[in-house]
Length: 487
Image 1 (cartoon, rainbow, N blue to C red):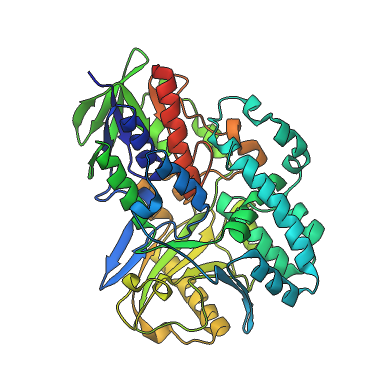
Image 2: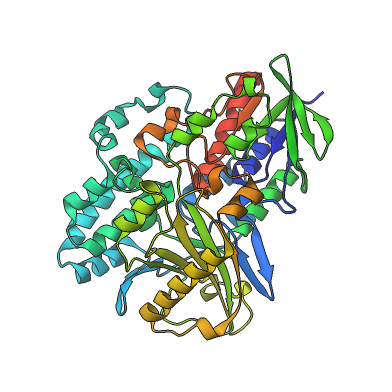
């Protein structure tokens, strides 16, 4: 008889873990709360427009390749990638922008335009970042976070200083121009923490940005979900949607299965890819590893206010990915991490996938996704959402010189309350736990329950951390741990 594994949630980490377990001969069933798989990477379709509701950046293509290669496959077997050029634009004000092209040599030329001679420092910085990338992404992140000894390698000892300095320090050591500093500090925002709190070793994100580049999967990030879903099904995984798990069944400290939609499902293994905090509410208090006090003390990555907007014309003067850094980052960051509040003048990000991908919008029209990072658990009411849309659309028009407000066909919003309702997200966070020094590797919540036999966890609140590539890795790590324990 095959070992049965029940998996909660159908996000990236769950789909990855399911595939590895099925490949090993397990009978795997995924129980997904929502009507479609993908977790935070679901789609919104409306009036001929298609929006990625969650992740929109495709970075670290080698991680995706490594995942599919584990099954004798390749990403191109499931979806088509296009490298973006420019990768993105950064706007610092009206007629004040920096475009980041594809390829380091082209980026160096752009840096020299902003600060003559800065390309030499950039090449040195990215060479160090590439070295960090090879240590981190090709080795360290594929370790399960069980022991501090996982970080003790000859390569990391050489980098020890960078674990106790910060990205902010490392960047500002080599660059003085505030625009270039902002561009180089930006990638670590994907890790969920401020540059002043993120270890300098995480400069590997700059190599992911400038060295490897930014890609777009045709039809959007959901194409990756669909590819992983098809792979899982090819391996025999069963996916059940509209299944709300209300309990993880335990007898004498060992998993029995789970309860979904009031029905008991018995299995040998339960792996939760749902929000870690929520997952532990599905067991009795005595079986929980982490108290509410533990979660309260953790530094969470931001929540987000998102708008999905259909325009009846093409938008001028923007790129597929556009960052609006025309207001001070430090002030906005304080409203997220220091004194949680709605920011007076928010930085924001805008994505226009229909610039690259005709499937995102009808002919002659544009799909726009706008994102404002916020502190988790803020008051979230319609009036505030509308106020902040007005703030960013006004600045958008001023900076780009394109009057777009009158061309809005519709807009939908998604914010803190929606993250809580749709994903059981702790305090409505969008990205999980921030990757600070004290929340890295073995210092993050564990993949394996220390109190319940055969209960495991995966996803952005455990190792290796937030982001789509780390989610794929987390699924692999959880599956490997399960297989090791069972053997």
